[in-house]
Length: 451
Image (cartoon, rainbow, N blue to C red; front, side, top):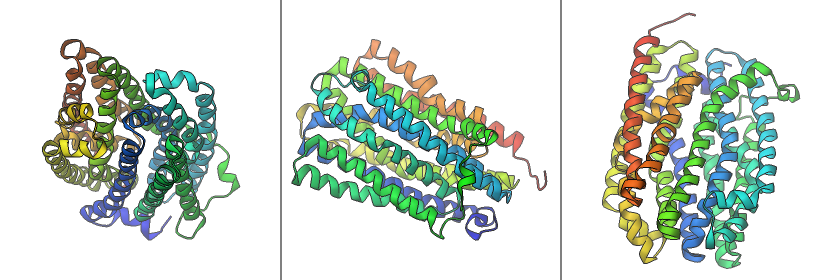
């Protein structure tokens, strides 16, 4: 597919390409994160701190189902990027059609399951005591819109794989702004409480879907699919599944982490500790937006050039992405170490939460300057279609290190042991990722012009 927008990935300077891809991705992530952040501020100030904890209970379930769309999107987009690099239009189109079919079918099944077992899932994720009822209200309404969110997550990664980062940014910005407007109307003006917060979120998913549908139906997209592309192709489904399983496993581990953290912290400190974790979790989504933007921008560049056998450019992309991401992570680290009290006070004026959250935030972000290697390293293997190492490196931080640490350290250090687990897991995961990335570059990224 000899379109300039995708072919530029193999020709432009890496630094310019990375900025071109990462800046819109970062802005999109920033706006989406601000949406979540301000949504939490609105809920905390207009409904109460318990409502923040209630939303935190729902996130693991809704995020996991949405991650099904993201995993299908990332897995398929890796194929699409490499197919575009190899000028294989037929495979790119068939892959996109299969992504849509898989996303719709799988997410609807999970939503049905989630609604049937609503009264079991919420307590399992820590929605106990005063948290249960508001969490149930929010959960049910948001779950209705999650298949739409999954389609948005899938479509957004495909837009980026086409080399259209600005449209991917717009797809994240429009619903985020809309959600804030709906939040104000439904919560503050109409006084709908948790119901208003939930419908504002679901409404934002629909806005995003409308924009993404317009993009693919318009002349802006290179991928013009028809009915024949929706039929499932087993080899493509397997490839999407093997690569997408990496993203799905990461989100599954995140959901398990939420489950364990909410229950452990509820047992150790009650609703206050769960609320503190909810605030810190929002900052994890928000503060690292530029680092995640670099990672998102890195994926299509690495995938395209790997598919075109331009291994020198792949290596240059790896090193440049790590350099940029590390610089940005260092700036984030300084900001969070200096202003955690001020940040916490924006969410709530509850005295106990104000006391507990700042030290927790400092512990959680203590290893932030080194996470660039971890994120880019795992993303590289996914971008080039190496599913097994991508999966293992993705699971390294939370699966192999973090979860065992939060099960062990609180026995010796109480609640502080939970917060200490974050930087220890980051350091260990970065060491492992650096070793395998260095080995991969040395052995398998030798110059090659033909296959």
